[in-house]
Image (cartoon, rainbow, N blue to C red; front, side, top):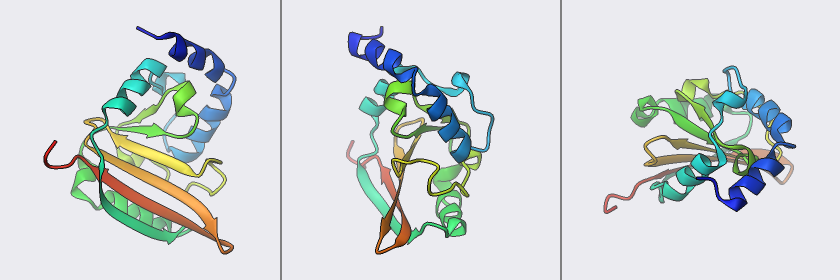
Length: 154
């Protein structure tokens, strides 16, 4: 059941939906349309129930070193497991996208593809989350890759 706040966000998000879909087309290698998106209620549930709270790995690389990014994400044994939810700043009001594999992610995305500078990939079992945080520091573009997992004691 959608709450009043979720309904308000969904209605507000409709104005940003074309921008959000265009943003997703820049960072995903698959066809992107509204059918790829979760509802606002489902998106909130995923965010609330995510168990990936413990930082496991952190890498700071040059933004344009996409081969290193690809290696970090795809050569891990956990990358072979299941679908991922994709979050950007628009996901809260428009719904998270779902991809079937990390291979659906466009590792060659441009720096301006996501103006907020944050992309989060959450595995559908909610025990792993990858945060891609990109920013400029001393006139150099960096990409920080943070991997969170469910703590053993949870």
